[in-house]
Picture 1 (cartoon, rainbow, N blue to C red):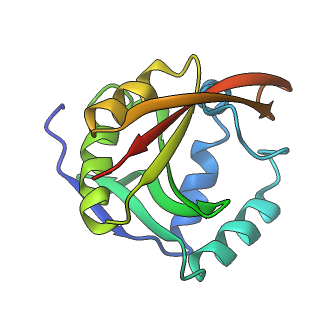
Picture 2 (cartoon, one colour):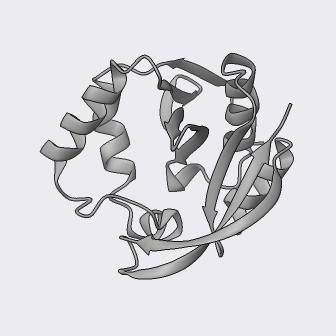
Length: 160
């Protein structure tokens, strides 16, 4: 990590503008793979995430490095399983921010088991999950909007 002071704050509606900008990055969107159908639709993005901010089942945090918003991390529930998702602005990749933020988040969000899913070729995100104690338990296929094709995803699990 390159001398970043990482903090997690409760996500506020104003943070969503930064998150929207991050997901416009074509390379990041490609690696994330399972993204919105139209990443350019800001109105839909803000509406969707504003609703999620008030959902008591979802835990959402804004990741800051030296008080600058650099990403997000959240727990949501899909098919009765707790899952995590995170996004780091591409200009901050490779600095250990995702790993630090996820480790800190997992102290706040203590539900277990918790799952993470990642595109088969998103090696950076796979490493983050593994450094945080997640174990690869399987794979699945799904339609990746960012690639407009079905791809394989790996399923990770953190038990304790």
